[in-house]
Image 1 (cartoon, one colour):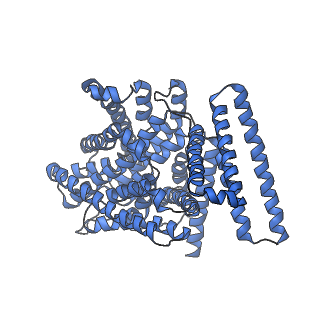
Image 2 (cartoon, rainbow, N blue to C red):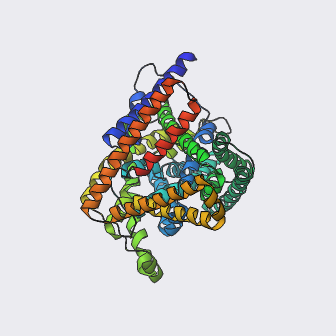
Image 3 (cartoon, one colour):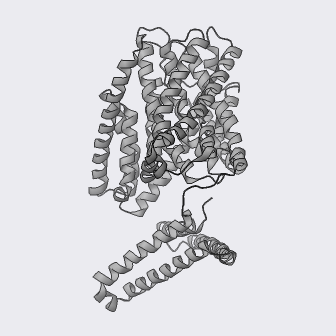
Length: 535
């Protein structure tokens, strides 16, 4: 047991090192992780770790979906709801259907139910893969928003398809009409349960005397509560997590009453996300030899051929869907042409090519049961998992590695007037500083006259106001101002480095408490984040 645990921790450490290497090489880290899983599967003596398939869904999917929902901008999501819906629902169902009929006719032994099962597993692109590729290169905000919104909702829609196909595979029959009616029911009821639990969690955060640690713990527990409650009533736990996460994300300014809770929770979730993604790819690496050994009736070459064919079909389906889905509604409806700028063929091509599969597909494939209710082996389980791995590997490597070069070659421009993020931050800070000054002048006029601390605070706010106004001028204006801004950042970074060194010397003196020193370190960190330009 201790030896297995040590091996597992070493594998997880290797995953973290690969993520760091990917960041250094500016390559999407899921590419490195999936390749690492392939290498791990061929290392002699690796431990065989068997986890109950039901636990895969329960452990990995709720937090991964919840995190995606939490970081989704509701305003941007709603602005681009039409193209997001066409991709998240229309393309998912189209992909699942085409894949189902393709594999039924192409792969011996596949039924329509197992075909839809495979289609539901591999239909959703991975947000983390796309985001990790696109953040290394400048791309229009609209494209990022659509891809992130699609990946949030299509995870939900594809997993509902997966759920019905799984039930059909177990029962041995599939009714499209019955599945369609049930789909609407479980979706709407799942959303309702998610919102009810999210509101209860919101009330706990909002009105009970929580601490930063309890706030963070509740955000980890919440997706599991939503998922389990919905699944208990046989509704969609996935839609419950997504809807609940969106609700709490929208009310996050009220959920976290102080900055410490917010910062701690962000850090907790960043760490949890990395661990979960690393674990899933390690699990597929550890299970791959057993999966290959269990390919009964298929040789490894045949399985690879099927996986590559399905990968090609999935890529083609997305490209075939993108252009009609983008331009036909614009040709038919004048209102769409008025509200939405013409996306052009370049933006549509990037969205189509950014369809890399990833961690959600892996988790869904690994969650397939070993046996049916009558004790017979689940039909084509190992082949489905193997094809899923090949699709993920193919799309990540081919599309993930070529996407940055395609974006650079297309030289796509932003079609929407978007204020740079750094400029937005400065303008927001001006608004809140003005709000603070107005509050001081209107409510605490007498105190300002008699209290030197409040008078100094007002002066500090006024200086910050002037400082941010000058920052906006530098961001908007000529090269001279840009150079001034660059010098300003360089000097501040040097000052923050000096302050950290001083804090180190203060800690060695053992005069002040570590808690007080850590608080000051946090202030320096926050100040440095504010002046670091976004890439």
